[in-house]
Structures are given as structure tokens and as C-alpha cells.
Amino acid sequence: MRVTGDQALVKKLNKSIVLDTIRRKGPLSRTDVSERTGLNKATVSNLTAELLQQKLVEETGPGESSGGRKPLMLLFNEAAGCAIGIELGVTLVKAALTDLKGGILLERSTPLARHDPESAFAAIREVTAPLLEAAPETPYGLIGIGVGVPGMVDEAGVILYAPNLGWEGIDLKTRLEAEFGVPVVIDNEANAGAAGEREYGAGRHVRHLVYVSAGMGIGSGMIIDGQLYKGAWGYAGETGHMSIESDGRLCSCGSRGCWELYASERAYAYAEASEKNTAADDKKSDAADQASPLPSLTTRELTARARGGHEETIAMYTEIGRRLGIGITNLVNGFNPEKIVVGGPLTEAKEWIEPAMLEAIAERALPYHRRELAISFSGLGSRSAVLGAAHLAVSQFLGRVRVSL
Ligand SMILES: [Zn+2]
Image 1 (cartoon, rainbow, N blue to C red):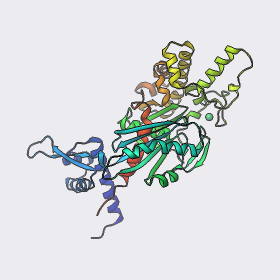
Image 2: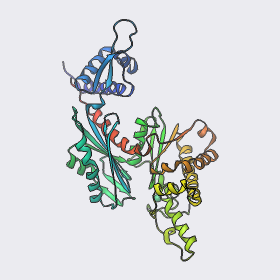
Image 3: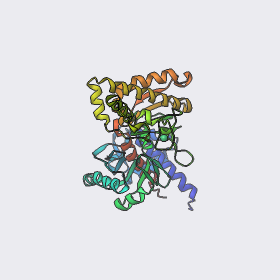
């Protein structure tokens, strides 16, 4: 029998649908899979036989019988391999070794003091070394590495522009693939976070999701109709550079009044400058004229102050929350999402940010847009991007699952 390209393609698609159904909804019997996918039982049986042989699916004890013999249940074998997720942040590099279902086996992080690509590469090597050592023996071994970066990434994985790192045109993917000998996926940190939340966190089963990542900047990952929206050339989601003040603070991107200067950890620098000015009352600090100055205090230090009742810090967080709500209102009115998930390091200050943020959205978002809108903070805490990055690698690996004809 001649096998046409189309048949091979159809079989590959069906196989990935079966695998995906078992992965998301398992344990399922073959009959369940057939009912959920609309594929006939013979097709499901053939495809699951291949998946069992490939060790991506396992059979487990008999399930509930609807009369007759009890069926064997099918489960995704998350222990068939492992993945590494990396979040390359402006001040911190984090990495996690996971199984194929996002279960964390080991995590490491290291501060990033210098932003040149060599230092970042050395930090990545440092955090991944113990993970590689700890990786268990599995049928597929390390299946890939996913990296979330604070910048714009093209389809080939080249980091085109990362203003917060001062990078332009850095091909981290080729370099990491040469070093580690496994496929590497690079994506924007907010896209990775959106994927993590949708797969494992607060965005599960949400078809229209906007994930807002607030740390040393703001980026958004937008899932529209179940798909990550990347724009015409992959640059969508740079919401931190939406102007919310027409003649506002000067930004490193060249514009003024960018959202992230008011509603991310960047805002700390302006609060520090104004505190200094009032205290010394001498020549004005130049923070106001500098583009995107970096703060000297961290969220951990500032939340400790807020917890101790420090009024200026609490007022600063209230203002950050209000500004966050204003930007989110623009996204809500523009995209009409089912759910907004706020994640990233700034969420450690949730307690002081959230009330003002919700109030601003309630006051400003259009009534129909906010009627059934759900707003929540990240379900994965500060791990959305690292788990999402690992998932990007897993998803690429599962998409490559070969079909035998
Ligand atoms: Zn900007």
C-alpha cells in the first residue's frame, strides 16, 4: 500500500490529539479517549499501542466498568523524560528540572550582577550544572531546555531586543544547543509565564487569558482562543511600554510615560529619589531625568518595610497598585479577556497592591468588559515563567513524537 504524505500527516495529528487528551485528562480508558476525541476505537487502539511502545503512555489497573470486563486505564507517563526551564531575569537567573508534566525535581537560582551575554551564559551554566547531575535515568533523558528572557525573540529564537539587559541580536539558542546537545526553545518571559499559568496554574481551562508579568518591567503573554498570540513578527505583548502618561517619565525604550515605570519594580527608583529629595532638600536627584533608573531596594526589602507598617512604602505600593489597575483596564477594554492573571516578582507585594489595583479596574473598565472578568494573582507564585519555559520544551518534544506507518 502506498502511503501518502497526507495520511502520515493525519496520523501524526491524530496521535498528538490522543496523547494530549491522555496527558490532560487521564486516566482514561480507550473508550473514553475515543469519545472525547471523536476518533474511532480501532484508530485509538492503534495509536495508543504506539504510544505505549514509545513509553509515553502507561496502562494502569482496571477502571470502572460500564458492564462487562473492566477496562485498563491509560495514563501519560510524565517520567518518560525530563526538561529544564530557565528564567533569565534582569537580576536573577532561575532554573528548574521538571518531569514531563511540570513536576519540579530540583530548582536552583543565582543572582545576575552583570548583563553582558558572557556573564548570563556563565550564570546559566552555574544553575543548570546541579540539575543535569540530578536528572534521573529515563527513557528519553533530557528532552530539551526552555528559556524565558526579558525581551523580544524572533521565530528562530534570536533575542532581537532586550532593553533591560542591553541586548540586541543575541543568538542564545544556538549557543545553548551547542553546549547542552539538546533542543532549546527561547521565548519572551511573559509568554513563558502565560504558558505556565495556562498549563499548570491559574489559567487552566481559560481560552482568553492575559498574563501580566510585573517585575523589573512589565510584559504580557496573551492567549487568544487557546493560542499564544505573538503578533505578525512575534513581538506582541510589550505592554510595559504602553504610554499611560503622555509627558511622563523618560523610558529606556525612547518613549515617555511607559506603564512599567509606574507599575513595576522600576517605580521604586522614583520613590527612592523623591524620598532622598525631601530628606536632603538640596539639589534635585537626577533620577527624574534619567531613563528607566534602577532601584537600590528589592521587593523583599520593601515588603519587609511595609509589613513593619512603614507608611511611605505602603503608600508607594498603593500607588503602584492603582497604576497597575489603570494599565490592566486598557488591556481589558482592548482584548476582552475571560481572565487576567498577574504574576512576577512584584506579586510578593500583593497584600498592598491588590486593593488599589482592583479598585482602579472597577472604576475604569467598561461595564460589559468587567462583568464576568476574573482577576487573579499567579497560581504558581514566582515559578510561572520557569515552569512555562520547561513546558515549552516539553510541548516541542511531544510535537516531534514520530509516527510509524
Ligand atoms: Zn518604554
